[in-house]
Image (cartoon, rainbow, N blue to C red):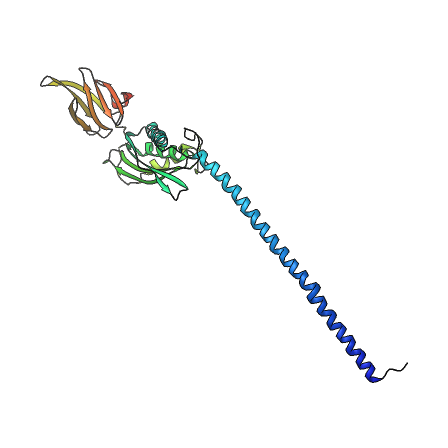
Amino acid sequence: MNLTRQQLLLGMLILMAVVRVGDYVLSSMIQGPLRELQGDNRELQDNISKQEKLLADGRAAGQKIEKWQKKSLPSDTETARSLYRNWLLETVRSARLRNATVDSGSPANRRGLYRSMPFTVQARGSLNEITSALFRVEKSDQLHRIMTLRLTPVGATGQFDLSMSVEALMIPGTKGLSLNKGESSLLASTNRHDYDVIARDNIFGIGIDTQDPMKLTILSAVTYRNGKPTAWITEQIGDRVHKLPAGADFETTAISGRVVTVTEESVVIESGDQLLKMQIGQSFADAVVTSGS
């Protein structure tokens, strides 16, 4: 059968129309929904990934909170204040610092997430003793940090007045009535002797007498004045003598305090909340130390 030219052209047009229609059907009715479905699937996967990340972050945050709670002061303010103050005072004294006092301020609420309580420390000692005290504070794995530190040389005696502020944290939900006894892993070295260079370097650039004033401050005599016993406390470093009746305040290079009682052979001195009892001829280093009332 012979096809005319018109029939051939008509057939080609019909074929082209079928191809166009098929392409439209493929694009709009098959590929379009398929791409939309793929897009929805990607969005769903992204949402799943985001939710999984949120869950992972939540678990990590929960673990951090549990870890912080173990290091936190107790939630009760007065319990936390008493425990940490006593710990800080004992830590300073164990480093052989003198005239040690620790005061605390009111806790501050940090956006409802936790509370912080400030403490201040005043004491006197050598650079080596102060280094020991700082090492013991930093070695303790509690939620605390030293905020400020000021050292003032006491002449050329080798003694320094220490003034330090410390902030300790209280995390809500913390249970227990004790402080964390763990040791921190953040120190550059856990060996105390690695920090001896601090005391050796003479960072203040002054002539320092390395003699221990506690050993060189003695109860040299007891005399009577107007019928009342008077204690003679002699500072051998500066060759100074303090003549003190009961009730008198005094300050030496070693410690400052108040004379509580004086007898013919001994004297009791109050320094901070400690009582020191010395016999004639004994130094402050040899005194029997007890807690005050």
